[in-house]
Image (cartoon, rainbow, N blue to C red; front, side, top):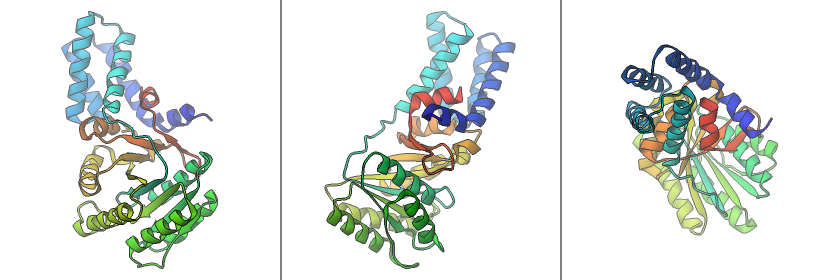
Length: 298
């Protein structure tokens, strides 16, 4: 199954909700004030924020009026273009090597699984990979990551449960420098974004990376569960404030009917999506493509 097929399949629930709502809208309403009001409600129902939904509809209204066209296909294509522009407002950084990638997020979003998938992804790009088991609090977290590391056939650096996460990071970086490793991926403990002392711990790990590998390209990625919907915005804001996020990895897209929140995150917060999980297997992760995402939901 190709990338677009995987992504389209993962977005099935979001697409079904949006497509059926749009079809009903076109069938009962001529394109006018009532149409645009209901369209805004449909976008909000897909978990696009009220602010972004309003901006999208106003832009659509202005453009359609300027072109003096009320054709369903024209309006649909124009809607796709505007939504894609929102996604592109946050520029997606190119991964350059050597790279250190630290994954952060709340509990249960799939960080450890994503470490394994990313390790496998970079290995397929011909890069050497080391993973750091810096989640030293959750029982058996290092064991779980070891399973993924073995599955991906990459090196893992870990300490005993309860150890200082920054010490794990330090050892992983020391090992990576000695071996000339291309990519270091750091798994961190899930933490509530309202717990200040846990956010300070992330800052400490960031400082270790910046001190020990100043020449590396350091990417801090927030793992977001797509079923979280618009509530993800508050998570993103606080993690961004703590460690200056470089991007987002979306997980569980196939379980969500509200994938539209991604558009608001990119447009309003300026944080791009870099990768998206498109299934449960180790190779079910792909670089995010805004155009394919919009085609997938509409």
